[in-house]
Image (tube, rainbow, N blue to C red):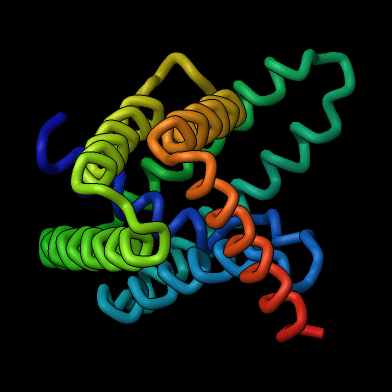
Length: 216
């Protein structure tokens, strides 16, 4: 994958989130819903950085409306299978992505690259901070810390493979991501002792309860 393709994929992910028709339908206080809200703020930040022109904004709006029309027509198709529906839905999204990408200037693509680098750095810092807190709270050994780091890096590579797999539609990729997440959780549980797993479960439960109480 060349540099230009990588940049366009990054931009498309950020921008497509801004145009997503699906909204968080989970209960208030659900941590997954907060995660989605955080992701939805990223495209807004990216829009400020790229400083879209009026012409670009108008073109984005036109693409969004045309994509919605295609999606609405697809929803009316009653004689197709679930896989055919998801395949066509993925094609429509890809076509819209290509059109949006074509509107970017060279300078804007360079800003996308810079933004991505900054985000990756922040993610790494956040992971190391969580791992440090986890190490203290659960009294992890050096070997456990090493294994968790290795699992984290492997997970990133596997996720990238899933995202870049052209044979799967968007729904299939989401399913593969769920499988990956489940497998990672199972492997991480093997790294921890029973006592550490129980303590981690109690902490997650308490955190979720605090989040729900804070939004009631």
